[in-house]
Image (cartoon, rainbow, N blue to C red):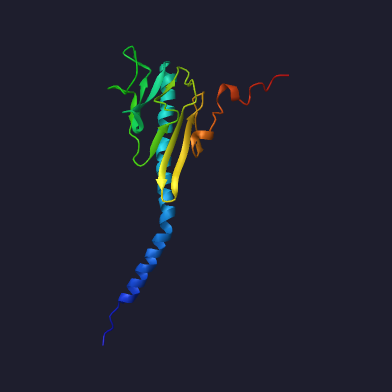
Amino acid sequence: MRRLLGFTLIELLVAIVILGILIAVAQPSFSTLIAEQRLRQVSQQLRTSITLARSEAVKRNEGVVLLRRDGAWANGWCIEPSTVAGSAVTACSATPIDTYVAAQGATISGVGGISQVSFNAWGRTASCPKFELETQSSVGACKVCLYIETDGRVSSATGACSNVTCPGSEEDNPWSGACSS
């Protein structure tokens, strides 16, 4: 008599139960991994845009503006010269320097209701614009604060922007007064 090889129904059910338990244990950490990756992607995309706007301002020797699209940073943004046809830029024009569409699943908000970030011909900003980026995972919200120092450099900090100060601001330079006697 020939013996048949294979799994019995009980062995198959036990394997499925064990697989289900492993998936249930791994799901929260996998959800967090996906949320962190989404946050990293949006943060890098916005950081690249800010750096491009700054370098375009220096290259063109004129002001350049990073503008939100359709009234919200979550809709994307564009980079434009600070004047188009002699008038101040208020929205993304038909021929921007560059445009970006924000990734889905992330919330981007300008702290203090900022609608644009302006760079002068030296690549500096007048203030310290801040962006709060947020995604959701199964364990809660993941937040990062992206801020632009007055010298134009982009920095980031984990968590909300409420406690973030701009180290590049004129009154907080660590080397100021270092050589005074």
